[in-house]
Length: 277
Image 1 (tube, rainbow, N blue to C red):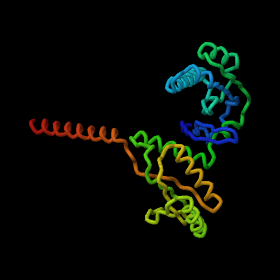
Image 2 (cartoon, one colour; image 1 turned 180 degrees about the vertical axis):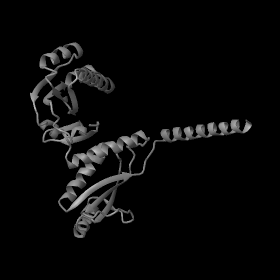
Image 3 (cartoon, helix red, strand yellow; image 1 turned 90 degrees about the vertical axis):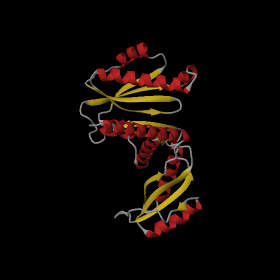
Image 4 (cartoon, one colour; image 1 turned 90 degrees about the horizontal axis):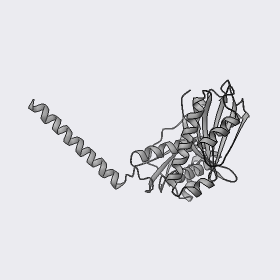
């Protein structure tokens, strides 16, 4: 098993959940011997009231998560499968093996390491039912991919708040469905990109590329993908991904230019030193 962490947002009837789950256990679950589910829930209201800045708030929760994982890992039979975050609470989930942890041990650790209120329980779950609940469905898999792409863009210096043409690739089983969807999408403000190429799929041989001028923040992209996924799912369609050109900030472009200049100077100096030898 290898770690394969994915982040996505799940909307329920009452709230928005932000889920981080290790899908690396998916092909092996349920793991033999890890039959108990441990849930630890942190109430976020008291922490927000005490911590005056968002940075302090996040750092405190990160330290708690790291210490908790380190302690449980030291006991030798605890698998961290993920967490669920809402506006009011943060939930951590583990699978335990061989009776390595009991509620008395958790209570003692909390009393020594955490000043805020928590709730926790251990219950049998030999079929890993809760883990399967945490795994993303088809639409949520797209959200996982969105988060990975946007993280990569940010890492490369993209100003994700800056609007640009964002392209989406759709595929259909029937040409009639593609033509009907073109009309629908144009009425919704999308542009049909006739010049953009898409390699046809044997099962979905009719591609359609569209675009919209907007930013690539995670909320924006997820809302767009959700809209398109639901639109085309009932018309023999498949959503195949999105892309855009990068919009780097002026500061990042300046740093890149300076870096290239320094590298050029260093290269010239090395060549000069070599020539003098």
